[in-house]
Length: 107
Length: 259
Image (cartoon, rainbow over all chains, first blue to last red; front, top):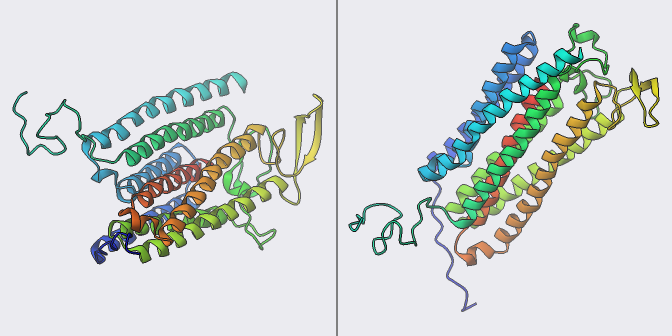
């Protein structure tokens, strides 16, 4: 149609960018496999759980920085998303403490 | 200050820093609101998962060897003994294989999503449509897997477990229990199944919304709505949501199936 805008310019693929995306995917997959290796080869206990949580946060970092491109946003936006997450640290400490106190009272 | 350098990014040289019309966060309204929505959703899911851990540590953990695990509401179950089924492999003990596959599917669909966003930056309609379709298929497959997972969890194992519990009539009964509901389950304390339904259900609800949005983006890209609009920002915004769903699953996977 005559009223339609002219078609957008298609920019050719930047292969380096696409390779980086697949690399991140490989890292995420590898970290998940490492979790499986730990799950079946290690005694259950606090150390294993801390390893799982560390690996999970590591994966989360890759998803947020490389897939959601949070690192490329303006610094104020980056910090306004990341800094509030500090509250979760206290939430976790407080509720795990609460849970273990309930355990002591109940059993 | 009266003199504002024109080189400061995002600051209009005409009006100064406080004069309005600046974009300190250098992101569009839609993207910004998506980020803040996701931040609030992070808090919601984090609260659920922390509650899961808090309730979990208030119960004793199963202490015996894994291979003789028996479900009981006296202690918290071992996840690899609860989630060990795989479609078409009835009775075969395959610990965590199915959830591993689900994790793989969701991560894969996240990768195709980021490829669609990348194609959107290049205004490449064909590539956007292709990668959106893959992402959509990944999302639907994940939902189908979760439906199977739930169905298996609800119907339970062949043998069931002997559980003493308070039934709906307020009576204490000892009975062989198969599967799970909100009152009693064969795997562990009632809270175990309640949390499972609530948290994976809430995540599954997010995936369902995500699939609807993915279809919207796929359809609009295919018929050329974004081409006419002049940009593919909608793909980017829906992409943020979809990656978030993947992010949450990574945590659900750790807390429910590994710990």
